[in-house]
Length: 567
Figure 1 (cartoon, rainbow, N blue to C red):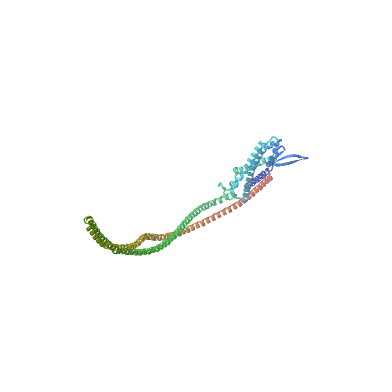
Figure 2: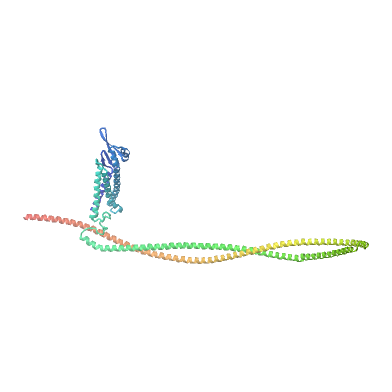
């Protein structure tokens, strides 16, 4: 353990020295070119001021803007070489900063190891092998570039010497690391992995710590090791069993939780289905009520239409009867009788006129046949007699004509009266016919409405039947869902009982595991006590051995003195 601490303190000191020197090197100049000193950040030139020398320092940027514009030697050479030297300095700065960061982590890691004695932040252990290579690479690049681009009168400044020294320290640091890592075994496990630094545990490679070489310790350790191994094996078995039981318990719990969630979802779905069924049932009841009200209204409308139809049919029958009786009794008889009378009177008058015309023609023909010469006197007498007879016939003819005119006027008046009556009858018949047609149209519309209402009533009856059928199915579903819910509740109760029994089993196993852990802790305490006793015995043994050595030396001195005395 002391060797481990010595290594850690030595490495910590080297890292701190490494860090300080790198920080110092970043502030020193590395080359002096003639009268110009070049560092990583500026160029200084010397010039005479009366009686003494002074330094004038400018940065690279200012130097580039002013001095490099001159063409006198050696300014132009410096300006040609300055960019390359500046690039080399930038490379050095980058690698130096990486090395500084790695050194800071390395120092922090060493401090944590020495104070806490644990393995803090495993990634910090890699900082021990990154700081030195980073700085060495930066130094090599800087030396090669600056040497290649230097001129004949280049002077080596103090900064480059410090670079060489730091490079040597970096090589020492990395060499110490690999020396301890590869060629030394201080019974401290893998020193760079920094396991727990404790003399009472095994190393990570499986080798036991060399607590002591006394036979007493080995005998007691051999006596207790089988029990310890047995307890360790039992502890591992119980741990595996407990972990398996916990896994099974977790799996069972997850399964039961999933089943419960699924059942809850099914319950929610069933409740939603029941609510939907109840809502559909209420809507169906409302629709049935509305349909019944509409059916009653339609029946009332049908009754009104049928009564109107009966009234229209009675009106049509009465109109037909009136129209038929008037036509048969009044119109036809009057028309036939008047026509017959007129025809008969006209025929009689025509016959009388024909007779009178025939008599006149006979008289004319007889007058023409008598000669003028022989029978003039007779003719005159006959003419006078004819004239007299004609004059006697003329009043009769006039009477007949007047009579004919009066009778014709009477007949014309009768015809006009009959035609007026006929027109009135026709007009009445037309109005009756229009009423009959309207009644027929109303009857047809009523029949059409009745057909539509009957079809609507049939569809409403079908809907009512479907709703009743759906309600019956929904009631069956409700009963089925209630049974399913009851079965699921029973299954949940069984699962809860099984989970409770499993929980009791796990708790019993946990108590057994706690007892085993207590036994293992007691065993560790016994081993620690034995180690303390063995260390005390070892100290006493060393004291006894020292005492024996002193006694042997005293005895040897006494024997030599006795021999001298005898001699």
